[in-house]
Length: 260
Image (cartoon, rainbow, N blue to C red; front, side):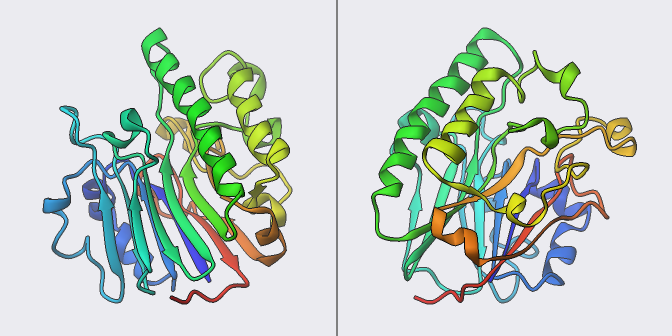
């Protein structure tokens, strides 16, 4: 099973830059998008409903429509689609969508960004705290989970090019890193990319074109799984050939066959 996760920063812009043409050649079983910035009614035609895939969207319903929102494309029809986290403030922004299959659920997650203002930081930290409770509930269920997300946090020093200059910036703040410590340590969730690639130097986000040219990046994008999926990770990679947004697609192959 091949799963692709990608923060497209606007599905229309990503399409214009060739994302869907590229994706059709990747033989992915599931494609998870974050930050689609679109209304579902505007995504009913090609290329936003690619051949061979079932398409599901969860949009931002606030007055800031045109921001946020997530999508899932899957070759195998899911048993159920779950929109949201049962967290009102998060759900109106379309931050999470989940496809349930037999014995496994695959979700797409957009963690709120921040502009470093007190208001946006407070909202971000509130979401992070509530999401920990959600993950605790997931762990008690008798099924596997893969959460493909733009987590907006570089977990460790190896996950960004210049950790010294980033220590006081959102994306590498001590509380954010502690949050990832709790998820990947205390709760035993798995950073599937790192199960295969344990070296530094590969990132999934560059804030500017100049940063991308210099590879001054961050690994903000993860596929996080329940513990027993750890031994099913076959390959992981970050595609940085073509530029579809400031983020790069994260690709992970699993020893798993989707079924309903």
